[in-house]
Amino acid sequence: MSAVSDPNLSRIGTLIRDARKHRGWTQAQLADELGTSQSAVNRIERGHQNLTLETIGRIGAALEAPIMSIGSGPTHLRVTGPTRLTGSIDVKTSKNAGVALLCASLLNRGRTTLRRVARIEEVNRLLEVLQSIGYRTTWLNEAGDLELVPPREFDLSAIDVSAARRTRSIIMFLGPLMHRDSRFDLPYAGGCDLGKRTVEPHLIALRPFGLQVEATEGSYHASVDDEVSPRRPIVLTERGDTVTENALMAAALHDGPTTIRNASSNYMVQDLCFYLEKLGVKIDGIGTTTLEVYGRSEIDVDVDYSPSEDPIEAMSLLAAAIVTESEITVRRVPIEFMEVELALLEEMGLRYDRSPEYVAANGQTRLVDITPHVSPLRSPLDKVHPMPFPGLNIDNLPFFAVIAAKAEGQTLLHDWVYENRAIHLAGLNQLGGRVTLLDPHRVMIEGPTHWSGAEIMCPPALRPAVVILLAMLASKGTSVLRNVYVIQRGYESLAERLNELGANIETFHDAVPGV
Ligand SMILES: CC(=O)N[C@H]1[C@@H](OP(=O)(O)OP(=O)(O)OC[C@H]2O[C@@H](n3ccc(=O)[nH]c3=O)[C@H](O)[C@@H]2O)O[C@H](CO)[C@@H](O)[C@@H]1O
Ligand SMILES: C=C(OP(=O)(O)O)C(=O)O
Image (cartoon, rainbow, N blue to C red; front, top):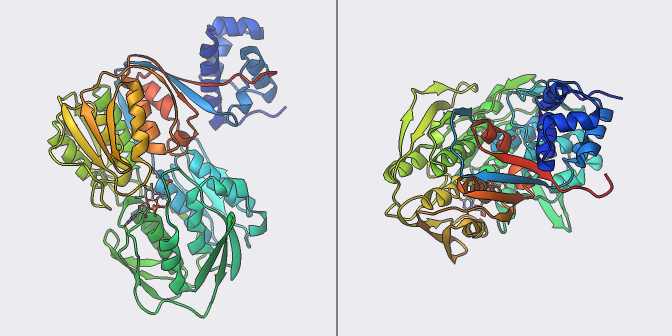
């Protein structure tokens, strides 16, 4: 029977511990049931014991929880609050740079090594897709270093359609793949349910490189005219992040200069630019809205790159501290992508300590450690609304809902970007929040709030789901958040990491009859 590899042991140990607690057993009771010692169970739960699949099966049967099929059934969280968090936590590298870089590896015939990649479901889906078309992908260690070795030719006919349909990021295959094949099909893009998200700006951006796309039921059919290449600057019709990334990737393998205007200068775009530079693609204007890209006809480089920290995870962790009235230190905050958020929080009354700046492993992004102090908060005078970088990040807006719910007064949030995201914030009302939906884009939040526990189905949107989880940390009593795949899509081991700070979050699964 094969032994499970080391990096997974602590994860499996945590699942076993949570399943045991869910059954209401002590370690000694589980040990009795298995005919082993309590110290052995303790070692297993801490990930210090090698496990065969057979042992995992026996433990699952004893606990009436299928440990190994746990990833396939829905995962739920049981939160006991209110919680006070202590200690410090490191921000992980970003989901959005991670997925862009996985797609950008398609440009490179050489080996790509990415350092400290967040082990999240969105990355897993893209890895499944890359493997299905012939990549060798290897997690090198527990730190999340990831090696990607492309095949000589991609086998797009073997693409894992179901994995591809679960991630919207697959759309970023268009930019690189159009240089490899003159005709190819891609399964339709998925992602969170945030309302209609147009793909038209991507097609407009890639058309000057000769790409035409026809959409039919479930697939994009792409064809490329090699004779067509950009003759004047490409002007993006929206300053979108993945649109900019697609245009950058198309330009990177275009032999000659390309100008991209109305480009996003957001964090993931900058990470992609730094990676492309390591591939030998020269880019002027990084961090601005006009990018001059000097592409190459062939890229074959063994490259090593470290994406930067996630400003959205940083905001999530700061919000966790604020909502639970805790003084934790959030380390490795990419400060240039959090400045507007912090300025607004200061206006709302937040006091915090901030370390001197230091540089991220990509050698570019400025980081700080932030320790918020428990502070009386008041609602801001004006509405809170996002803007493309350097404005308040669109993905950070939802966290202001749960922060505003703590503040004295009324706060108006205006999410002009997404048709459906603000709607999901109304889930806070089930925990005692006073959130009024004025229209699909605007919510009024009245604080302060006395949170109390409830059972809630996870909304189908990543950030609102985390916002509800954070409110649960502050809620009196027990809460249950059901089916949290959407959170795992963007955060690595969030429940476990919050537990290390003192939260009480149990992961559990529905008992499967007959197991
Ligand atoms: C993998 C990744 O990087 N995902 C991010 C990326 O998605 P992505 O780049 O895919 O975002 P979209 O292109 O879907 O844009 C999001 C929404 O904003 C609208 N829009 C965008 C720009 C603009 O100038 N005008 C405009 O109206 C779009 O029509 C769409 O409805 O950017 C979003 C907006 O920052 C973030 O929420 C996502 O986390
Ligand atoms: C909307 C988001 O991401 P995606 O583009 O992956 O759906 C997000 O990160 O909040």
